[in-house]
Image 1 (cartoon, rainbow, N blue to C red):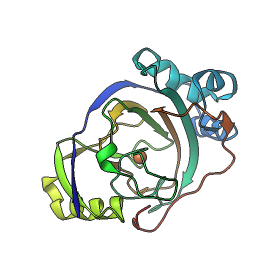
Image 2 (image 1 turned 90 degrees about the vertical axis):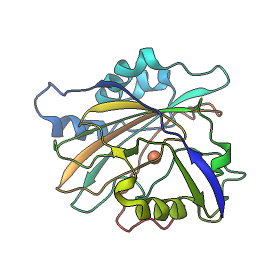
Image 3 (image 1 turned 30 degrees about the horizontal axis):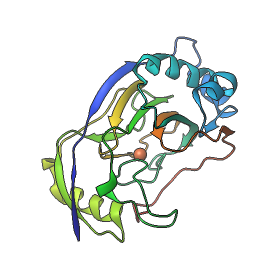
Image 4 (image 1 turned 180 degrees about the horizontal axis):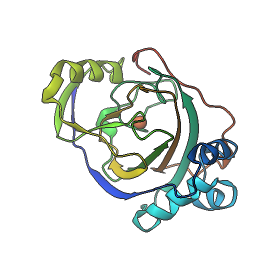
Length: 220
Ligand SMILES: [Fe+2]
């Protein structure tokens, strides 16, 4: 087992309220304009209405170091009760790995790497991301990093303090901020927006495929 310290940094950036009437229609339209690894310019040109409004809200807070690139991903999923929009389990995003198939290395987390994350659900009580709010030192198995960390956090129970963000809210988190998705309680359509600082430039692609997840975390 190894040990790493996870110090969360969460800042509320803003909130998007859909004022156009039929939010389901807006979510369906966004489905045709999902983005994979898009630059800000590509998002402005090819992204959907929601991607561009979320980008408007965070634009002034994007202070990406010159050695990194702001990269945007969006997706819209249809969730049934007990389905997840991402792989369930506590994790941090884009933690460096030695190779594509190796495990992430929490020792290489970088507090200067930021992620802006926002979601908009068709349901006010839609599935919300849980974010860790206190600093934790956690031991983990380097052969199955996120599964072992999730198990340790689950064992902490109520002691592990968390928060959620209201529907339409956008936060900026640092890379060592642990978070996890929660299962849908009702049928819902959900838009996800993330702008991350990466060391590789954007690939500027449209996203043509999304999936939902059902089983509990087996690590990845
Ligand atoms: Fe994540």
